[in-house]
Length: 77
Image (tube, rainbow, N blue to C red; front, side):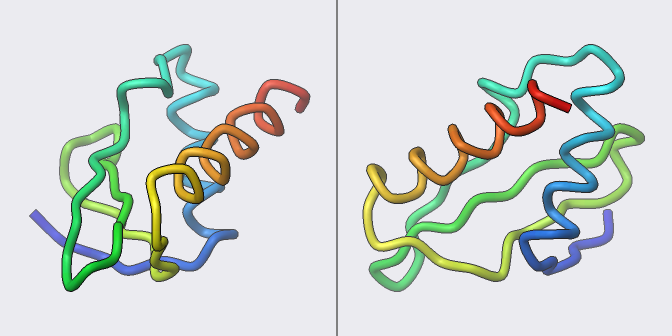
């Protein structure tokens, strides 16, 4: 499986593919703590690539607020 670090625009673009396929986005991402920071990632629809967001977060509140806002934006498109 390929691992690709992406910026927020690329992360959203790939996440939008899941959304348009009718899949749930609430339990999709994987959240991990590394080096005192949180990272978010998910696997592509074809299960061939893991997309890791380059941005790191300092708290679950910060990360989940960012992700929740992203889900809201996708729901409005």
